[in-house]
Amino acid sequence: MKLQHNLGGLEGLDSAPLDFEKRVFVQDWEKRIFGIHAAMMALSESLRGALPGYDMDAVPTAFKTIWTWADLRKGAEAMNPFAYFQFRYYEKWLGGITAYFVEKGYLTQAELDAATERYRESPGTALPSSHNEAIDQQVIRYLREGDSPRRGPATPSFAIGDRVVVGNPPTGEHTRLPGYLRGHTGVVQRVFEGNYTYLCSTGTDGLGEPMPVYIVRFEPAEIWGDVAEPNAGPLYAELYQTYLSAHTPKDGDK
Amino acid sequence: MTEQFSYSADREPASAAQVRALEALLIEKGVITDTTVDKVLGYFESEMTPLNGQKIVARAWVDPEFAQLLAKDTPAAIAQLDLPEGMAGAEGEHIAAVLNEPGVHNVVICTLCSCFPWPVLGLPPYWYKDPVFRSRAAREPRVVLSELGVPLADDTEIRVWDSSGHSRWFVVPERPAGTEGWTEEQLAGLVTTESMIGVALANQPSAA
Image (cartoon, rainbow over all chains, first blue to last red; front, side, top):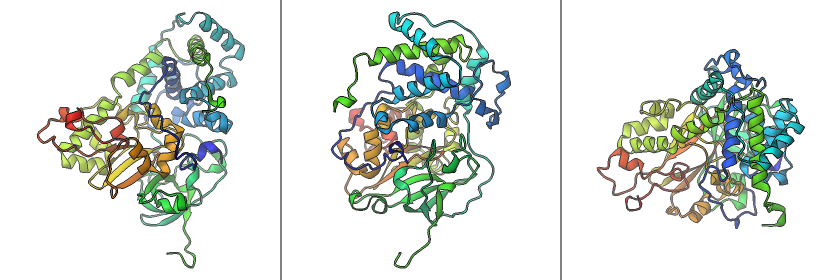
């Protein structure tokens, strides 16, 4: 598990001030990388299996590979954990997305460096022009219709009220299991209707095939022990079934 | 902060040039068009904004049956309102509301990254993605809320929701006192993005 997976409840930050910046973008350039990321998700090959039935063959884009949130997260989770905190949110996006396009062969580092140099020297230079309604239409259609992971009826192993223990699988490239919950015991609060797939297989981490999802209620004292907040209320997490196993009562357990 | 975390003066122009170069090359190569990014941004500037969340909350305040449905089946409730097409679109496929009530206050966080209900609230503000907030709000929400100036009684139960699965959560704050007889439009004006994540209460009538 990496530090990026285990931010919840990190000790030693009690005196760290909150940066209550309400803006979504703090630099204009950040908007552009957000827009590129959204377009990549909308043009991703992975949408061939999406429920809205996107006709990807009719979209004349040169983008022919998969890009989902999981790919963005793999980049952030692969970072040196200390470097992770040196970069602002969209700086990490810019680094990860640029690296993806070079790795996948859409552009070369040399092309990118040369173009970057040109825009450094003349920031006002216009973008190249190219019109293609069908690409933009797919992008907006994706934003409106999304990519629901729901697949088939629920096949739950646990019921409301069951005590469950959170596993500690190897994280691999990407996980949806918050580190601070690993090894802890909670109670199933809700079983979602339907099973849920994931954006990709996360390998040893366990996601990918359709599976039940639960809301599990945790008591802060059970998670944090002595450093739990006094008078703390419950913490709820939404957890995929692969991360859970049945709690086996031991002598002395309540 | 230490030197390690200082920003060079060059940092922003360098990123600006890099993203411009990237967008230009992607247009040249036929990945996107010269209008794609602007259209994405326009969608979030004009249609998927916190205004949608404000309208949902205002309806819940004036219509108890709607509020009940919102808690039980959030997408079905949202579908009843006259909101932009796409409320179940990207990052809204499985929206879920949690309702504050006397003695219960909810806070939504995403300790792993930045899961956020785009169609209801628009794109996440920076504070939501701040590692210090994500870390502290999980373990000491009462202290965090107090630092942010949220006046909660000591016996109010704080419920923290970590967005680690497919749902995208938002909070329905409590209706402020002194708003009897207000129209939904007036009420919507009291609802802030921060109050719909649970790090603020809805504005008081006097502050509106």
